[in-house]
Length: 366
Image 1 (cartoon, helix red, strand yellow):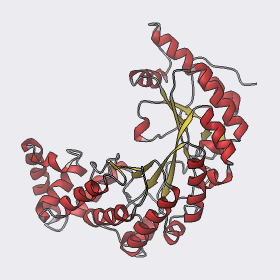
Image 2 (cartoon, rainbow, N blue to C red; image 1 turned 90 degrees about the vertical axis):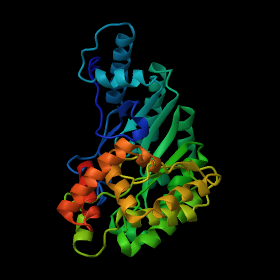
Image 3 (cartoon, rainbow, N blue to C red; image 1 turned 45 degrees about the vertical axis):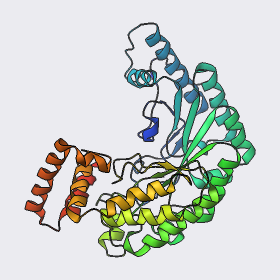
Image 4 (cartoon, rainbow, N blue to C red; image 1 turned 135 degrees about the vertical axis):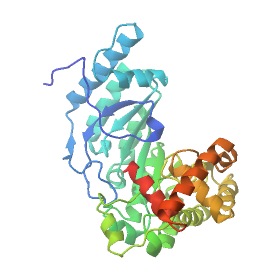
């Protein structure tokens, strides 16, 4: 039996940007696959499914801290900041960690969701990461029971629907597996957020990556399609594919063109495109399909129609974290700072060195 420590609880290393204000509840440690060449988040962490009693203890600990904060008592625990952050955001959302929380046995998941509802009845949204293969192995009935106990959204890192690329990156799934896993979630009535990684296949696989990813998503029909532009560096196993010449890195402009091909091929009714990550050049690419498809393509075309210098100015400003929208470049203060950065890049890297410089700037996010 696990002793309940009312002053401590465990959290994992990451969560989606959309869960920045959520309670974080760790069901598993690490990732059961842990072989993807583009990811090193869990590289040194052995996968473990936590004991249900441990997770229940964490829920109780968070509830005690929440009650103390609400009653005005000082919250002295090292994790109290997380509860305070969740309360500042309304205290109504929770995210289940780590990389594949639902690898836990269904009965255990149900027990945890039930206890979470008992101690936090105010929570209205519970979300989790999951692997396509894990979802394909679960019955619609099991997933439906999760929804009935409060699980409202599942985030899946699809990355690509192109089988040759999925093999190269060692994703451990095929396009068909992505479809089966995604469809199970959709059929259970749980919101599904699928992640696509523009630029992942380089020049060589760009077209297949864009078109097959759209084809697979068209069959899944998720609620959200989130863009996560690939970020390369020597610390990643994927780097070997590009440094060896097997794949050739796309420039920022070429990745934008790939995204255009991808969005143009999407035929999903009701899905929302979201570009909510700093790695994406065009952060304003957000809209519902099919009604806002032309708007999304228009944003891309507006960028691609800019003179080269204006594209580069936006590129360095975005990579420096100065802006998100194309119209932000009209702000004189932002433009002046961007012009200064661009001039420095020209000086140190040459007129053709903008992509090299901005790739180095992106490297800080690895």
